[in-house]
Image (tube, rainbow, N blue to C red; front, side, top):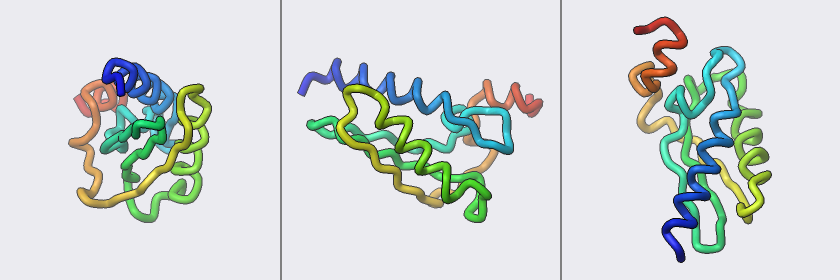
Length: 106
């Protein structure tokens, strides 16, 4: 498999993830640090390992589905699956500098 093609697809996935926002925080889920890992298989199946800001997050049911649906809209993606983990638990330290600045933490 062409590693350049995987990198391009990875960039497209990250761009798509940056269009999804936590409804309670005006920052996208990527900059919030909710995305732990993105795996792309040889046949372009995508698995996203992510977390939520808390286990009882109000969007726990809908956010993973939104992530899957949006990633599936990328032409090259065959299938997308989201796995939620709370190991490690999300903390504000996981936010990007951009997110911290946006939320007034810097």
